[in-house]
Length: 272
Image (cartoon, rainbow, N blue to C red):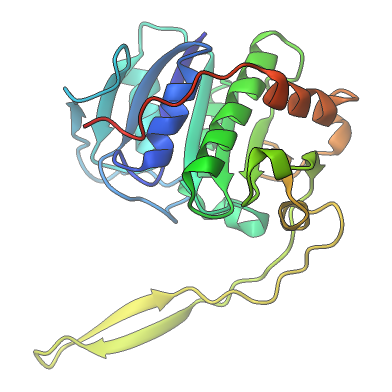
């Protein structure tokens, strides 16, 4: 199985390298990721400028690694259309994101946006995120991506779904299971902050302001608060699919594979 790995937190994010290390146990991994942090850009592309691509010499053994001076969407398109143009890519995995991607945030998420570009090209895609920054949760999320990737590859679950995975902030022993969720709802009301730059000129910042979230039973944030791994099934419009889009027993089987499989210990957080 040939796997393209990317993210929106940039090439130096620890979650990217944990994801790559876990996934190389189930397939051949290539990394193509933004050269810097690109959170909040959604599926945007760099259509008005040239895109520079750099092959890195410092990488995990056996994993070709490239950076792109652009968005996560740029990274996926360059990865598929240039770096791996002569390779049949079986799966694209984006993450592990440092922070959850739930509710309407999937529309702004570079993590989900990168996976969306893969689905637009007919390639199975998974986006993986953690509720809070922690290497333990990164490992759980990476292993969940590996489980889903193998199930897709073996045709046990559909390959035409964008699987949006969010992992709660707890150890694996405390995770209660996997829950197929629907998006929670929290409206956004971003504000403008104005400041003087010290030279009698004004500059402005967009400040994220979140309204109160509605997270009824069965929603992604509800599942995370209850210590379940949330899997939201998304279509190519980033709208939610019904739970019956996956086979009966999906949640139970994925969780069983996650906790029962023998996982090699993580050797490193990131390459030196």
